[in-house]
Amino acid sequence: MLCYMVFDITNWKTQIRKGYLELCLLSLIGSKERLYGFEILDLLKKYDLPVKEGTLYPILNRMTSEGLLSSIWETNNLSGHPRKFYSLTAKGKSTADDMQEEFFKLTEIFRGLNN
Image (cartoon, rainbow, N blue to C red; front, top):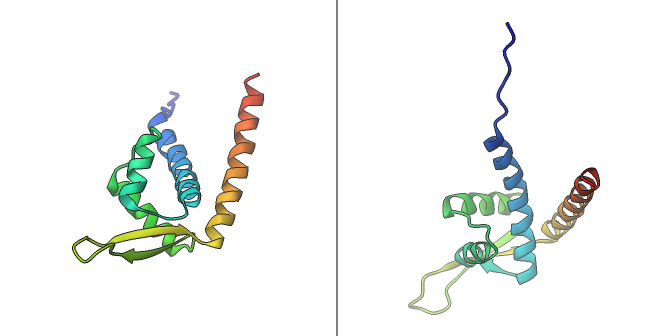
């Protein structure tokens, strides 16, 4: 009796989106020089890549601990609440460049396969 595994497209979408989101975050933060969490959420939503807080902040924290981002807490005025601003480090810039190069390479390969 043959038993075939069913391909889980949902898992594939999750994995590809995770890598893509990381590239987008590094690119977005790099292009704006520094952003805080809610700004990032708003910009991603504007670009039709909505992300939940529960997804974004663990990624930002991991990227900070990996040395790709630096973060600093700031309060604009005494009555305002503090905001954690994120910026690319030199390692983050280099990693974003490498990721972008790989992404473009893969998309060109994919386009070539479908022509």
